[in-house]
Length: 59
Image 1 (cartoon, helix red, strand yellow):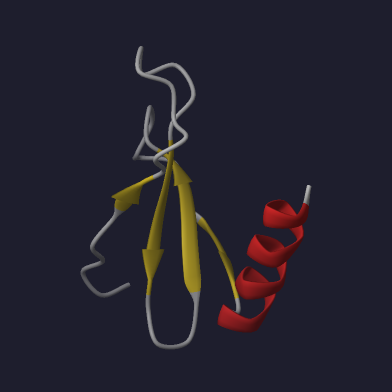
Image 2: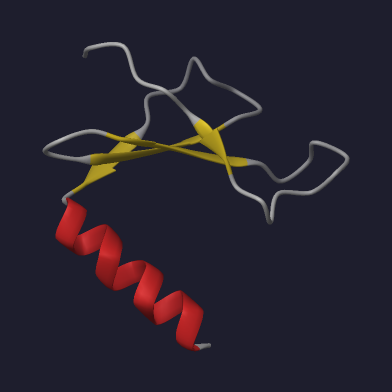
């Protein structure tokens, strides 16, 4: 995997106990738990990520 630039969610807890990070690449969006960055991230297509964000914002 090429070098990714990870962004922490603005909704992550301030105590560091519930942190999600996202890295956007051309063909995939990668998601990981920032508390254990050695675990492999999961990846979804940009279209699937956009639909997830639309759904999450609607709730």
